[in-house]
Image 1 (cartoon, rainbow, N blue to C red):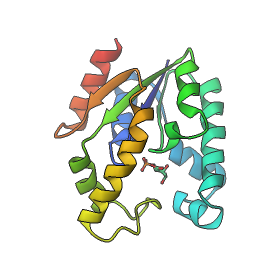
Image 2 (image 1 turned 90 degrees about the vertical axis):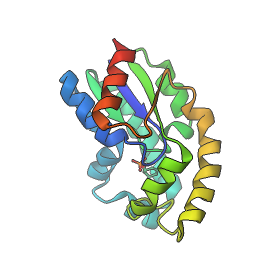
Image 3 (image 1 turned 45 degrees about the vertical axis):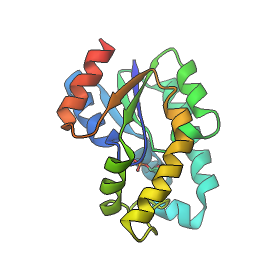
Image 4 (image 1 turned 180 degrees about the vertical axis):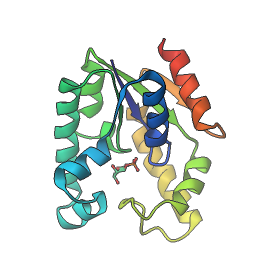
Length: 173
Ligand code: S3P
């Protein structure tokens, strides 16, 4: 089984993924880290020098490769991964993959991302918390149509990472 964690930036995919993989003795692959390793540069640098379209191409290519090759793996996606190039369809069509949406509220995500925006090229330029909320509100609305297709939904607000992991395990087994 490949447990695919998806959701908006800041929803905890990487940190929840780490604990979940440890609990299940699964491998952990963080798609952003995988891209960074393969491309030998940071996500921000890829966006800056090669552009978002190049990043999306690589993201799709590596996602499809991992869905083919891996098993017993927790795969933490980037926030945009399910929303481009038929990626959500590919995840849903995979016999091995189970998709899990880590669902944070606008208020929760916006507060967290305002202090953690630097490494995220899509939001790094946003100057006030009010503008961050406005941007994320629209973006999350557009993306929810993809996230909502996930087979399992877990609400994350005000929960400890371990509680989120326990909720996922309860839904899965
Ligand atoms: C993105 C989310 C980021 C990263 C890139 C684009 C997005 O991952 O893939 O900056 O489009 O939402 P995180 O969700 O881990 O921040």
